[in-house]
Length: 222
Image (cartoon, rainbow, N blue to C red; front, top):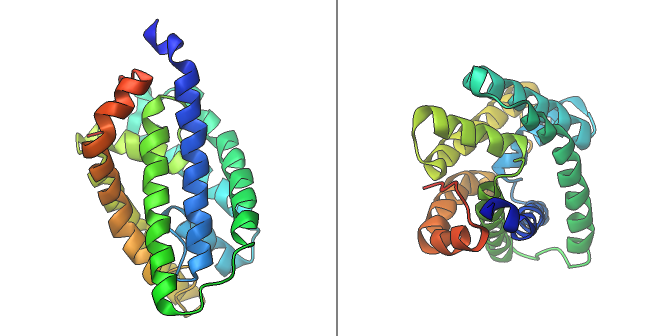
């Protein structure tokens, strides 16, 4: 009953978290130091094949959903297939945030680019911190992290750090082999892969109880 009573609060944190996270992705693009790790593989597909980013994101999301099914097997819930249409909403949010960010001038030097990139990791981490524990449909990558955390019994934040680094490595190796350049990977991507998961853990430590109390969460990703 409590879960139903708090559905409004959960929806607020869910869509608010998604919006904040997409704002972080847009800021990372603006910094021009490499996309965030969550977008690194879809953007690599775009760079290598010329495919539109939305289609590449959809293909990547479907692949990640299949990985979830393989990991969870009989514990996989069919409702999680809704992760696929959710990525469309994510794409719309990203388009809006990208247009908003484009109103601001490009950072003129490396220092400001680096500061902007650091801000982007905070936004992405805070978005993940807000929307994942609501219990609603996760984006496919975060859904996979929740599944991996459940199966391995490793804390969510730690799993995110590991997977973010793996996605960056896959993107980097693919770009180096296919186009002989760094492609979607830059210093910002590497820093984000290390920082975002760590920031999620810190946010959970500092604000997790207040967040869980606000929404009556049964999921505590510690």
